[in-house]
Amino acid sequence: MTTDDAPGRPGTEQRREGDRARVSTRTEVRQAIRSELASDAPSDLEHRARREDAGMRPVIELDHVSLAFDEPVLDEVSFVANEGETVVVVGESGTGKSTILKLILRLLVPDKGRVLVDGDDITGLSFEEALKVRQKMGMVFQGAALFDSMTVFENIAYPLREHTDLNEDEIEARVREKLEFVDLEPDKVMQQMPAELSGGMRKRVGIARGMANNPELMLYDEPTSGLDPLTTGTITRLIMKLQRELGVTSIVVSHDIRSAFRMATRVALLYDHHIVFFGTPEEMTGSDNEYIRDFLGGS
Amino acid sequence: MPFDGHRPDDLSTPIRLANALQRLNDWAKGIVLAVQEYFTLAWKAIRFVFARPFYGSDLVQQMDAIGVQSLGIVLLTGFFTGMVLALQSSVQLKTFGATIYIGRLVSASMIRELGPVLAGLMVAGRVGSGIAAQLGSMKVTEQIDALNTLGTDPIKKLVTPRVLAALIMLPVLTIINDLVGIIGGNVIASAYVGLPTSLYWRTVWEQIAAGGFTFRYIPNDFIQGIAKPFVFGGIIAVTACHYGLKTTGGTEGVGQATTRTVVTASILILIIDYFMTQVMLALFSE
Image (cartoon, rainbow over all chains, first blue to last red):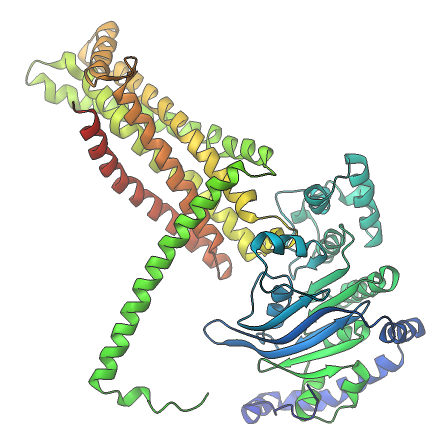
């Protein structure tokens, strides 16, 4: 997939009409993103560079994946996430971004094409085999999807109880460790119910639960949506910390282009069921494709 | 999308007919598919009873939610139904001077029909809606997906304990319902008609004995009265889980799932009650 054949946005005429006011700000926003990229903490850039030449073992591979329900959702989508890499899938709402995560989790099966996890094709697996493959992955849902009948502790302990032989002490130690990793005070939150937590805290507990099993792959569905700018920053840093300190491969689905650029080693832009761009954030800002520029400015 | 040659506004009659047939076909397919899904869910739920890991604490929790917590409404419906049965039958029987048979009428109606059906309907309303709402909310907040992602089969974790709990608890609730109903009849029989309690209970037993026995000691009325709520329990739990897990479209979808559950389960209970009665009567009429 290259940058150059990206189609222009349809209905641009009408949209422009309504967006007239925003057009002037677009350039400013684009500028802001550029400068943010440039002013990124050196550690971030370093880390990103390190990631890029990290091992090239593909962990996730989508190979010409097509999926349609009543209408096409994904059409011939291909990309690769190598070990230790963070691929951020961006695109407008309703372009099938979350579907990609469901395909990787094998909650959905593609109509055509293959999904490979660690080099193994997971499309043909039975339901029980799929449950096993999912244990390699930690998923963070958009609304955190914490089990609201359980305490925070029980939520994080859940995957451990299901899949490990850890005893109660070991489970508690692991839960504390994960809560500390996501900057929550274990003693304070462990016995709380998810309903008592703020949105940002729920998301952090969601991340803690996702990583409880020490998965090699983390999937994030809109990790920063619905959060205030400060919390967005916190969550973004958390995701980066996870890849930096634990070397976890991550796939992030987002429409928040700013935080996407901060975390991504590579960005995949989904448009009209296709991936129209797949490359580094720098390549993306440097692109002169109209849609990409619109997308960067408009978001 | 490529132009396929047919604009919707210049359809000729054959094409309209074909479209109508197509819609009919889709509709029929939808129904067949739903029925298939329903039975697949029921089958999986039952099969998982025998598969590791078994979620025992979930089962106990559900038995409490479905059984123990439904006791109040079941006691109330049972008691008042028994009373009204005694009251109505006393009026009818008085014209024949046969008020001593109040006990027979109350016990026959309660044990065979009203006990199971009313307990079923009340539990469908109370528990069925609760299950559908809970699973529906879990579905729309992605908690079902989360279970799947964490390597747990949601059917095993959520559906099996609920179905099993309903299968166990509804017969228990029905027995309580029957008993309380007959006691309610007793209260009215002695208060309004002046029937001695001992006579009332003797006629109750006469009625049960008149239904015949299986294996010499098990009254056929009891078999009928227990088999029905067992089936109804399954219907309520499977229907609620089916609609709950199929929920889409946010909170509105949860509301729809709840309504559909109560309506479908209630109707199924009434229809299946009829056919079970017919089968039971044929079996036990000898």
